[in-house]
Structures are given as C-alpha cells and as structure tokens.
Length: 407
Image 1 (spheres, rainbow, N blue to C red):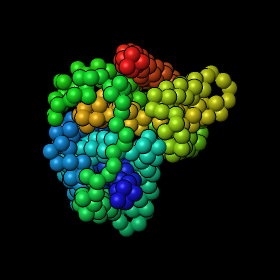
Image 2 (cartoon, rainbow, N blue to C red):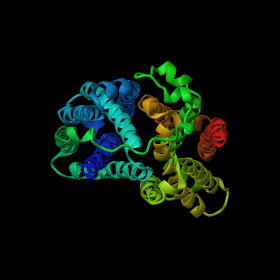
Image 3 (cartoon, rainbow, N blue to C red):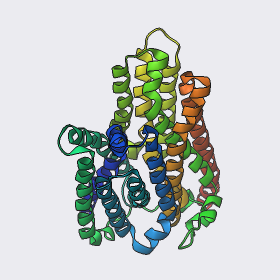
C-alpha cells in the first residue's frame, strides 16, 4: 500500500508540471487565433498566480477538513476541467474565466501534496518528486509542439493534457483509502521544535503562523529562491544574447539547460539527501548558485564561462525548494506544517510572479548587464535568511541539549 500510494504521488507530481509550460509554449499561436496582443499572456498568468496564492493560503483549512487525498483529487479535477475549458475557448475572456479554477486547483494540490510528502516520506523522495515535476514541465512543450504541427492545434494540446488530468483524478479518487494508511516519517525530537509550536492548535490562523519564530525568515528565503529561479528562466537567454553576444540558438539551448539542470540535480540530490540533511542541502545549494552567478558575471573574452555558470546555477537551485519544504515539519512541528507550507507556497508564487516583470522594468532603465547583479542580490538574501534561521534553531536547541544532559 505504501509503495502503491508513493507511485501515485509520483504520477501526480508529473501532472503538476504538465500544464505549467503550456501557456508559454502555445501563446505565439494562441494570441493570433484569439486576436489579442502578445502582452495579454501576462493577464492569464496573473489570474492563475492569484488563484494559486489564494488557494495555497486556504489549503491548511481545506486539508484539515477534507484530508490530503480529497484535496489532491478535487484540485486535480479542477485543473482538468480548466484545461478542457481552455481547449473549448474561442475568445480571450473565456481563457480568463477558466484560468480561475486552473489557479485555485494548482495552488491547493501543490501545498497539500508537499505537506503530505514532508510528513510521510524521506528527503530523497521529496527531491525525486520535484524532479518528476520537471519531467512534466519538460514534456508539455513537446505536446504543444506536436499539436501545433498537426491538425490538433493548440486546443488539442490542452484537451490532451486535460483528459490525462481527468484520468489521474479518477486514479486519485480510487486511491483515497490509501492516504490514511501511509506510515508517517519518524516524529522529530521535541528538542528540535519550539514547545509552543509543538502544541499548535487544530487550526493555525495566518496571523498566528506568521508570529511563529523563524517563519518570516523561511518565507523570505523561499521568496528569494523562487524569484531567482523564475528570473533566470525568463531572462537568461536574453542576457546571453544581448550582453555576451552568444548566438541565439546556443543561448536558448543553455537557458533550457538551466531548467534541465534543476531537474537532473534533484534526481542526483535524492541519492544523498537523507545523509546530507536539509540544512546542508539549502546552504550548499545557495553557495553553488552563487558560484554559477560569478561565472556568468565575469567580464572575460569567452562566453563559455557564462554558459557553464548557467548550468552550475541550475544544479545549485535543485535541492533548495525540496529541502525547505521537507524541513518544515521538523522546524515548526507536524501540526503546524500544513499551514506554514501553504504560506510558503504563497510566498513562492508571489516571488515567481513579481520578480521577472520587476527585472524587466529594471533592465529597461539600466540595461541587461544587471541580470547577474539581480541574481546575486536574490541569492544573498536567500542565503542570509536561511543562515539566520539556522542560528535561531541552534539557540533553540541548546537549552534542550543542556536539559537532556542534566537528566
């Protein structure tokens, strides 16, 4: 039962990634068919992002009331309905309408699944599961490409993935009896969490969660990481072409390698994640990204260092997101983890949504040369906040260790 449910969750993580690249991959054709400007893609993504943030914040209450299995099944079902709705849309306003359940479903399932895995499975599975998200995100552009070169059109790509999501919804509904049987990961030592956190109430309101010591630090680090990742994905190719005179085809290939580096890096990290521990993975990830950014920024005659730096930065990004999520139950208590992971998801979506357009505005005023500087500021902020949190945890653990020695 344990292995069967884990396999279903792996499939669910692939499905999480499948829709994420569809709008970007199909928009060059979609906006022409719908008769709207290219810039209108931002309206769709903003509606989706707003829904994901709202449902992430509400996920704790929904999961406590319905359970992780039901929240996952309902959310995937909403996403499936939205994708099928996209495939039937003949006007832009229809896309905007269907983007609402799309975003609401995506945020809720992300928070519910991440918390469930953090509570019930080892760190290696958290890394491998997020690697499978990358698999889904990498597959969907190929589905869109095939649809655009065949008689299916962009609507066919949305219908194909929508039907696949509907099939997964059925599987999730059939698997509901398994969700309560999964054996939890070992309970963290009480010395690892603050006493008041371990005694969290049945429901943790947003204001209370934000007052838990260390939560603002983790949220800021998570925001910085997701802002860094999304900015690099969107602007790396443009920077390489405009500032380093890289051939556009080469720049596009290496920009895609940044995302592939994250996917492959998460798979490799899973091999040693349990031994290394979440704190070391987060620290090492940020430091590796910093090394990659230095290579990107070096003013040398060859562009090979910048290209290599982009790949290294992608590998460094790999363990940060899974490790922050997986460490939440240990850092803040199992009862509070769903509420805090929901807030973390909201911080992640906020960073991913706001940072790329903000850098676009900055680069328009100052030049694309500020790209590595922007990444450097974000990685420094993430590393600083995570290290401050580690010192807070160390101070929290010291009295418990002394008490254990006296006993």
